[in-house]
View (cartoon, rainbow, N blue to C red):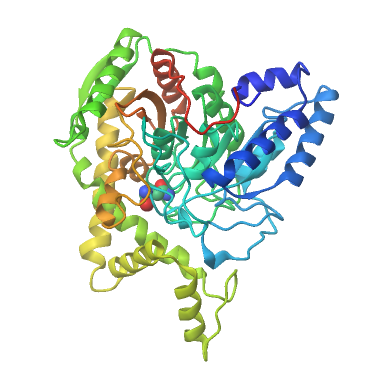
Length: 490
Ligand code: GLN
């Protein structure tokens, strides 16, 4: 049961081969067994899950079902969930029990999904390793062959990716500001998509960098991601940046194939220091798509080399503004002092971890009067040029193929001394956020140490259908069926 795809479990539930209660119970038992090792969930919500599963069984018995009736999933602990503690993996929100539900999680619930719990993440989604969570690191369910030292699951949605890979959730929500869905998907051997900016409502998601943040799903198959996204997406009057466009049948697009499509290979993504295994997998992906009938074209995205620097100005700038609200007065933690300023200072010093403080300081600096033009304004100009690169490229191709990340999962504690080394993880993922375009990571192979590697497909704004078509084709060609060392199910 735990190994099934969402599509297969959905069919089995409808055929009454097993009940939603049984499926949920199997997941809760697997969480109890594996979560102490993985720390993928910050909060497990068995009562909620059991009540939702019971309601799902009642609906199924009546022959009424939504797209996800009875499917157990994890919700990244950055989405507000009514009556369930929401931490953003930060001490500063402790204790915060939202009185409202995020639109994305409400949409999933509307379609019958069962919430198993809240998944771990980097504090305020700032990180690429899940090491910055105030609730402790997440262990990647995969390990190197013959070496069981714990590896990171990637970040920031590391708990979501690890839970799906270890079969302790059938799918999960994530958010992606600079790669936080795609990079952990690659590190954990699962699929994950960041849709077009505006495709999913941001309402009720704890904000990191509002012009970049976008919600999306993780699952073990591309089709399952399409099914989840179909429920998550849609216009929401409560988010002025949510797009009023129809939600197509993403799952149907997975069967389209790539015959006649033009796939661009951006030359600037071929950095000199690229690991040979990553380069080889990329070439393999190109060959798979060519064999499936796509035409491969070389394209140029000349401003790629500025993307990481641009991102690490824009994202901290917006974060410093968004995080100003955590002042000890309105939410969570409060550490008193002799006056109001001392209250702010004491609360923020006690509540924020080192990486979050670093972002606030960088963001405040680049927005300050003397440096605004030199940093923030220039970054905004570069952002426009990066978007223009993609717009130009999509004149000659329908989608782009790149590696998702420059390496496989690394060890817990590695890359922690130098923030720039950590930021380099995001080199292939941040351009899509700056441009607002969709990006999907598909597990495509294992490296020499037995760790999963992903390939990334980027598409035109609001053309997730082509992205899914290309992703499903790669998935079929790759036939990725390896399982992590720590894994429930068969
Ligand atoms: N790793 C990137 C960062 O640290 C991206 C995080 C994200 O997408 N939320 O900012």
